Image (cartoon, rainbow, N blue to C red; front, side, top):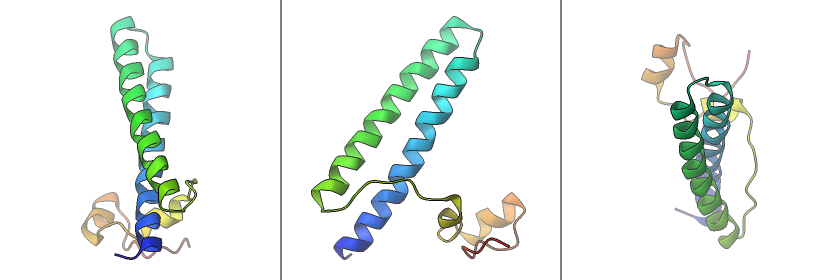
Length: 95
């Protein structure tokens, strides 16, 4: 795999992990159970470590970690997954 393609794939994973941090942080803030709140905070911390590790690797390869729009995710999702989500195709195009 060439360097640019690798950076692109790492950026995709970087964004997945970033979304996980956002998700678990949000869940923590909205939880009324103190133990669940702590669990979500811990999971968010672990996911943030993944974000940091992937960002470091992207920079090491000469790239720049950054957010990508959801339309970019559709281009790489397997067709079967798209059908399960109720989309006829994951062409990367937004209609």
